Image (cartoon, rainbow, N blue to C red; front, top):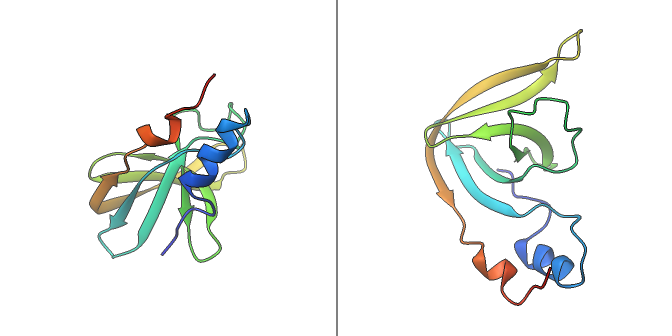
Amino acid sequence: MAYAPHTNNEVRAERRIGRVNLPLILGCATSGAGTFYEFAERAGFPEYFAPEMDRVVYVGPNQAARLARVLKTVMHIVVDEDADGNPVVETIKLKARRDYPTDWVFAGVTA
């Protein structure tokens, strides 16, 4: 089970004071094997590395962040980097995916 290391309450608090350090948590998914993941906006990774991976997925008990592309029934997740610096991607079948409501995070936040 892997929950994000922060909550959207913290994201909202940051954005209300003009900071954008924490990525917005967008939803969760459960793999066919029963593993739970939360996923968020892409943040904290160089833009040039795996640009097609548009989400950060939190993995394992230490909430390690990995890049991923989360679709409705599968998740493509970067599990390593090869000798040439290219991402090594694994595909995980999803049993369930749920998007979190996030409009409330931005309510009352001015740009």
